Image 1 (spheres, protein in one colour):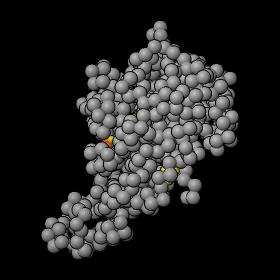
Image 2: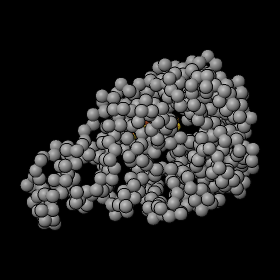
Image 3: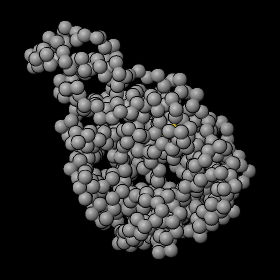
Image 4: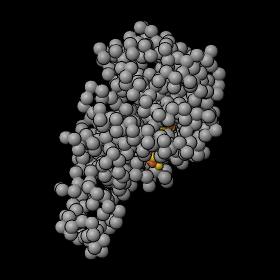
Length: 48
Length: 457
Ligand code: SF4
Ligand code: SF4
Ligand code: SF4
């Protein structure tokens, strides 16, 4: 494409189909906490 | 739904439901102002006419075709069909716990949400009996979850470090028995750090959070000791030592974290200072406080805060790939391999997947609810957990919150902090607007940094 450059290939919808196993870290969004903001977390789903 | 913005010379378009991010030219950026989900296959004549004073007909038609191609590929104006996953937003096993190992602190930080460690109660250390019962509680309520997290929190956890060690030892002794893997984390203000503690932390804690606000004058103004003196001189060398030693250990995760307030709206300088002091994993976050507090950030501060986030983001773009590269926690974003959409929509999980335990063994939805008696939801000794509360929090996901459902940032923000919503809006389902505005700005910056990296390839 000449006018557009898409910078990622992931599709959130596809991730939902196999997702939701809950093995990843909890993600407190608050300023006072150790845990992560959600979008920089790692998925820990086994069969992926 | 799409979200488009211009930052640092880039025209950026986020397709919300698919998560696709597009760098576009000005023509497409402007065309998108006129288009929505009801896209026709061919460029509407009035659109062609309107743009033809500034662009050639060939260009307009070509750009329009590209828009249609993205739309067909499900990467632009993609529909919201997440409703079918609503059955996954239900009660889940408890997998993470915040252990309030010490309701006491040796600092008197002005903005402390925990009332300098007391949590509206009295100063108290957790006994090993409570810690042990908390581990049993977590194992029991985690059901089939394998990975469990335990965060040592306070007050200041190092004031009760012997119990920290005992709890870690006990939890490790239970791992094989129950097929669990514990991950420990700890947050400390550093005052009591010594070689022994550094060694233990680096050996056992998968993440460690070191609290320091940045430049000496900034840190010492709010993070003071009981006698009023600042703590910067004492903690900085200890943190440097810990981080240096950590490079040899099994875990690489750590971060220095600070809070910025109305007193340092030039907080990018604090981030850079921390980097100059040898840290490369840095988090500096806005204070959340009652608007009447002198250090509180308010709506009037937003333009300055936004400009500062943008300044920091541009500096990071310039430094990327050089030896002065560093991570700013809230600009970290993995656009390709982040968590699944379900996880993103579920939110922080407090009161459902995550709970906090007080020195008495009482269970609360999370550390920020501790001390608010009406939110107590169980006790570790009788393994109780209030099923109605758990259900209430399970439904506090993105789709349970009116504002969040409509928000372009929902897959990255996850619906904000329920405790802040409770405290400032009186309802766990009503987001704290000031926090939302800053979250969205950080996200725009984070996406721009990724776009810039891609552009430079
Ligand atoms: S581990 Fe991966 S698939 Fe499982 S809930 Fe977390 S992000 Fe989703
Ligand atoms: S930014 Fe605010 S409205 Fe948007 S998802 Fe986060 S909490 Fe909800
Ligand atoms: S309610 Fe707020 S402080 Fe509590 S776990 Fe959720 S994001 Fe963190």
